[in-house]
Length: 260
Image (cartoon, rainbow, N blue to C red; front, side):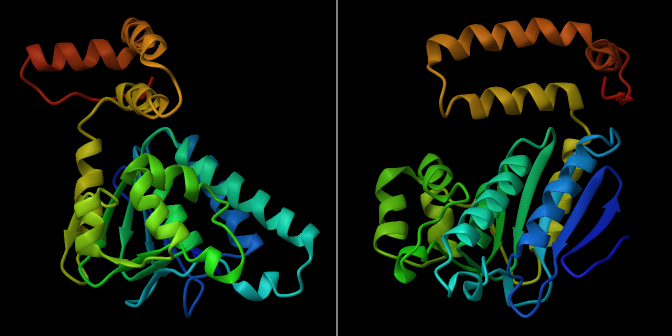
């Protein structure tokens, strides 16, 4: 386990657990955003890591987003720098080659919700509250919020949350498709780690290209995505994992993935 003022990293099997650690509300800073980008880049290079889980330190907050004191002086240069850090960090997370899961354990606001939106899967505790309240203070969600939220819940609910500033609870979030599962208080991390452990049973090579194809559907016409699907299917036959997976099944044994 490695610890610092912003993120605690812990490895369990083939899963990296990243705990946002900036009390009292686990807010983002330029340093923590750059650290998140660096950490995910490092995990991408570690072939023993198949999944990552992000959660918040403590029982009250997953993350309250950016510290508004950063924008109080109205400095456009500072705003541009922070927007760049947010974008680079969360886009790096979205592009993580494995499966990313947000274990939402409390209030999840602004940039806190945006980091969860950048993950592949979201598990929320029953008491969690979620919102993108940036327009309430004259700002907008600039770390993928307008795009990722719309892709998940549709334009109507994205407009309710962003344009009307509507805060939703975990039950409503599950109903509209913002989160995939709701668990009892204190159970999100365990549920996320258990789900991440299932990823280790999948071929890492397959997971990576499947994720690429699923996310391509957000911007690529089906007339392009379907041929790409077939092309990447054939491409898997260049990997050792393909032969290992098929032969392990035929031999009735567990596969030993090499992630290549």
